[in-house]
Image 1 (cartoon, rainbow, N blue to C red):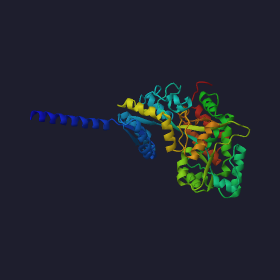
Image 2 (image 1 turned 135 degrees about the vertical axis):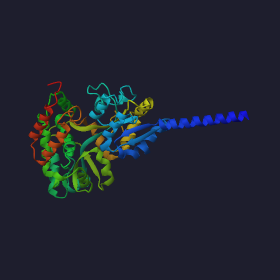
Image 3 (image 1 turned 120 degrees about the vertical axis):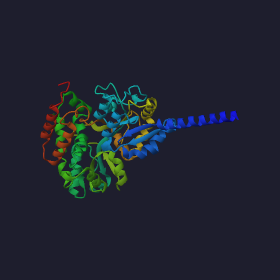
Image 4 (image 1 turned 180 degrees about the horizontal axis):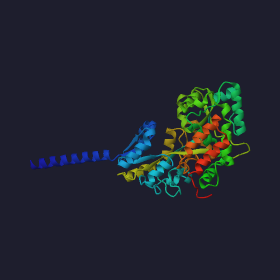
Length: 421
């Protein structure tokens, strides 16, 4: 009888231990903070299962917040000690501020970080580039999408130079069948992001010009930047009637409905147009200024992942991020989200032909990033916001290219003192 009691007690203890283990494991799962709530099903159905297939002992939960609320919500969680283990990192200052506060850890020694170039890591590194605190996941590439049926209808081909570009727009306008160039100015950011930052790298020679603005050896009043605004001003005759009231969703709809021929693009729009457009879509990089052979593209760092310094599961978090730094993840993520391209130094075959077109430009053009994002938008007036304003005004014809350049440089000079003059 006593043996039975002891045995029963042993079974009960073992059962309790097992229950505690299960509860502990449930409590010990990694939680990912992100603003990409539209990606929830992709993480749940594709990405996390791929990781747990080889790491069954590490449970992962993707827990996104609405994009507009992410920064504030994440900061509150970090300050209150309730944030998840993995932090999805926006590029540059927002993530750098978290690292400086001790909320993100250095990932210099993480396996796989050698898969990324210094430029790829720049969006999530200290200003001197010595410490990287997030694993780069993807960039977005700028260029132009076009309606292939419209081009055939009008009888034009893909332009390679600035002169060819405006010849194409003129012929499309003369046909009267399509809006030649589909962009509005109501939201302002489009004019800067898909306008100024799209065509500008060809003028300021990509990284050379971007870094020259930071070190003070070039200014926005210099020729390359003024010429960028001058080309932007030449877009005006080819925009839709009433483009001043045209918002970003309006631009998307205009192109999706087949009423516009050319769309100044960010590659993130690929998924939207794939879902809704009923015609074949092509893409071309920004046409180079006449006489120039080397092309440049904005291959802008967009998203990365870091580790919450207060995580209780540091080793598991490092294991997960080391996987994020592998070619397996690069291929999986790039194909699950067409238009978001891996920043790894690895070859990825994309199943979406339009996405493959965009990423193929990396082989012929030199990449750079938006020149307002690193360091130069930390003061007041904010450079990024100023570029939104003046780019929209240039497109509207209410500000000359020269005045736009002067306005931006004056704002920058009021607070930014470069180390080199």
